[in-house]
Amino acid sequence: MRRAVKEGRVMGKAPFGYANKTTENGKKYIALSEPEASKMKWAFEEISKGIYASNQIRLK
View 1: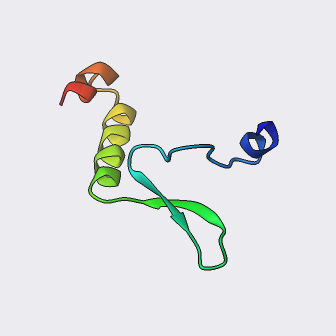
View 2 (view 1 turned 45 degrees about the horizontal axis):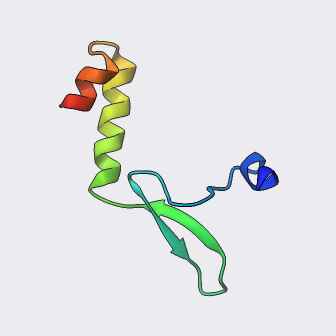
View 3 (view 1 turned 30 degrees about the vertical axis):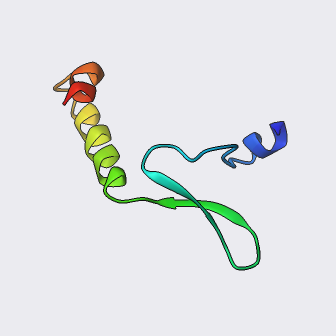
């Protein structure tokens, strides 16, 4: 499990905005899941602008 995390693999459930998927040959990966992915992109863009605090963006 430590090696998987070091390699950048997601252990367990995919984060908000992504979905767990499996290829035809059985390899697992995560893919974008709309409309949640666009909400997360908007939130990160707002945080990067520095106008609002992260808690204010979370409440929006």
